[in-house]
Length: 319
Image 1 (cartoon, rainbow, N blue to C red):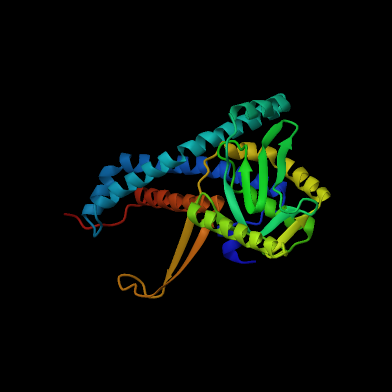
Image 2 (cartoon, helix red, strand yellow):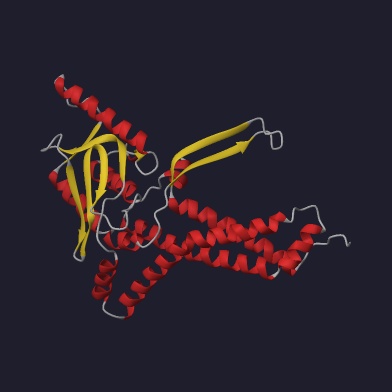
């Protein structure tokens, strides 16, 4: 499997248990980032004299210390909401474990607030029902505790409507994998091409292009001008059953920030300061789990390096 697709862009979320593990991993990453940033900021401020002395007596800019303070404060501010959301998730899970589990879930549902309009994506194939060709398809995301919205599939466009906390982009790779499972379509043949939250203009351009192509095909008497995946009524029911299995994970995910980014990574062939040749690859979307895990590794390394300098200060020439 392509590493960029498997790790960076759109992970292969196979089932409800896998989805649950991803959400719990995010619940662990956000408070870890917050705690490490707080520790790093405290160490740099508390031992500021040591680090300023090291910087002034070595070939290092003193401004590096100010950069570290800004860096840790910035991470601390960004992850505060995620740490609070993870704490709320832990609270409801502990409440369910030690008390009435159903009451804890109902309290979680009440804490989500009123639903709104969620994210949208455009995929590479048309998805519709064989008995209702050309009509929008609605899939409910509901369990016995309530609804987490609906997925509206209209051609190549999929919208998460009636969603809580701006919905979830991670829901779309899960849906596509389940469609592939129930229809027997190879997983690599059904994928997201455009994410509305990342590039609205490209998203609407692609959706309009597909709509115009399909309209032209119907006018010419051939409605199958765009590749499609057809679902039966029984397959739609099975998709709704599988979506109901991730409702509680979606509730937990609603307490966490929904950060969506494009990604770009470079491999310099000739290093700086020459840097005249480099390889570059861009990704339309970076999976939040991989991006937050990368941030956690960077912050943990920075804190470990600061702690090492405090434990064993490097030799620097005296004045």
